[in-house]
Structures are given as C-alpha cells and as structure tokens.
Length: 389
Ligand SMILES: Cc1ncc(COP(=O)(O)O)c(C=O)c1O
Figure 1 (cartoon, rainbow, N blue to C red):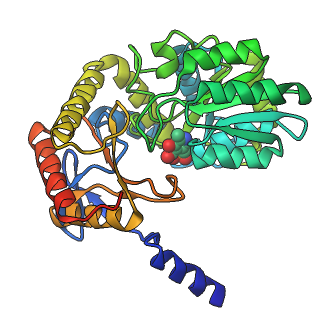
Figure 2: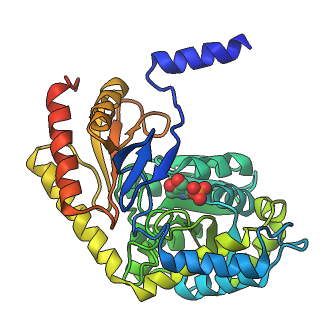
C-alpha cells in the first residue's frame, strides 16, 4: 500500500489533493456545508431547475407508475415506455430524427466515440475537450490528434495532413467549454467536416438549456442541427436531472443501439430520473425567460469583475477567473470559502498546468446582491494574495 501513500503525498505536495465535502441544499443558490450556509457558485444547476416543483412532480409521477428502478438494461427488460417518451421529446427538441439515452454524459461519450471509430480511423479533438471525450477516444483505439483550443487553422492543417491515411474521420468538440466558458466555432467546423468527409460530434453538456432560442444548444443557435452528425447533451446540468442523450439520424441511433457498449451493458436510467428529465425539457418551453435571465446575470457578474480588472475567460454563464498557480488558486478559493462563498479552484489535470482558475457557475437562483458580494470578496482575495505571473 506504500504506492497509495506516495501518490496521495505527492498530490498534497503539489496542491492537487482532492477531498469530498458533504452538502445539503439551503435555498436558492445556497448550500449548507457543516451546517454553515454558503453561496453556491460550483453547481451546474444553471436554470435553477433541480428541486423545482415541476420536475419533482414529473419525477414523482414516474416513480409512482414504474417503481424505483428499471431493473435491467434497455435490451433486456429495462426498456420502459417513459424512456421512449423522453427520447421522442429529445429528438423533436433537437431537430433530429431519433435520440438515445445514456446513464450519464461520461457513459455517452466513452460509448459513442468508441462505437464510431476504431483502429483504422482518425479523430480530431479540441485540446481542452472533457475527460469523457478523451477517454472515449482512447477506448476507440483510433489514431487521434488534438488541435489547439478552437484553432481552425490548426484543425485544418491536421486534417489535410492526416485524413487520407484513415478510413473514417471524426471531429469532436464541446460546444460551450466547461472550464473556459467560451464557445466552439461550430459553423466553420461543419464546413471542414463537409470538405474533408468527416463525422462531426458536438458535446452540448453546458449549452443545452442555456444557448439557442429554444435552449437546444449552440447547434440550434446557428441553425446547424441537421448538419451535425451527433449532438450529445446531459440532463445533469441546466436540465436539473441526471443522465444524457445523443440525437442523430435514425440509422445512426439504430447503429448505437446495436453497438454502443455503455448503452448495451448498463442498467437503463431509473424512472424517477427519466421523469425529472421530461420535466426539465418541458420547462425549457414553459419558462423560456429563465435563459435570458441567466445570461443577463452572467453578463452583470462579468461586468463587476471587469471593473476590478480580473482576468476573466469566456462569454456565458460559466465565469472562470484565471489565477495561474495551483497554490494561489487554492488560497483564493479558501479565502472565498471563509467568506461563505463556495467557488472551487480548478487545477490540473482538469485544466492545463499553470492555468489554475476559480470557476464561477452563475445560476438563475443568484440575486444581484449575491453576485455583488461574490465579486467584492473575490477582489479582496486577489489583493491579499501575491500572484506570480
Ligand atoms: C463537456 C462535458 N461532457 C460530458 C460530461 C459528463 O457528463 P455527466 O456528468 O452526465 O457524466 C461533462 C460533465 O461534467 C461535461 O462537462
């Protein structure tokens, strides 16, 4: 067991040791940690739907009708009609022929990518893509190339050089980047995909519910849903539930049902969770104003930070504040914590080395006063801590 001690000691020395903190909800935008109330800026409940009466009601209805578990995988006896109901809603909402559900976004990405590509294929992946995309690529056995973050010239150079040596090609990117808060140039990527005969997969985990007129994501915002081969998204963030989906052509989804191992060999989503996801999708059309309120709040928070000349990244509801060194990021996060603000330091390997940051997730549940308080405490925390450039 010495290797475990050595690993944990090293993590600690590098200010990279992770620990768990049990939380309890404490009203809109707040959590209790050890019975102390904190403003929560680390949740992805962007629209404030987790715990909303509408979602609880749909979840309860499904629980009452179907029980607590689906008790088997979809291809065994776990294929419930409520799963089909949600898949039809998703396909319709995303403007695709068909959709498929997954136990989580992680399972969706590892399963989809490893079913689409194999050793004879090539994958072009944004350098900052989420770990689940990276793991899916590794699992596929395909040759892969990472292009500099959202750098279309680099992407095209790589495709030009490598595409012809492989059978299939896949371009994969997040749409709204979870750690940088910025958005992929999807229009240009669609052009590249068409020009070089590649598949294009878009991970809309942080964009669904927030971006686009209907809240269907970045593909919807640019009218590109039909041109993107696979649109993947999760229910565990803005949609206030849990699980994930992929929307695509009917043929591609039929292929997934037959080929994606994380779909085939895993118990289907529980009914109560599926019900909550149905509630989440319904809320996007029933209360569209939540999206604009959220984005207004994020804009306001960004303006407060800009006044203080902080190095903020991106342009949406995810507001990362660049710090640099792990140690300094941790210190700032601790200073926020001492002031009842829960905003975590993001460190490698979640972000590149030397680019540690504090990540604020703005939600509909934060009031103007909450945002002012957070900006103020952050300003003072930065002043007190020597930041090495
Ligand atoms: C871009 C992205 N894709 C996929 C996932 C995985 O989704 P899930 O949390 O449902 O496993 C996440 C979650 O953090 C994510 O940020």
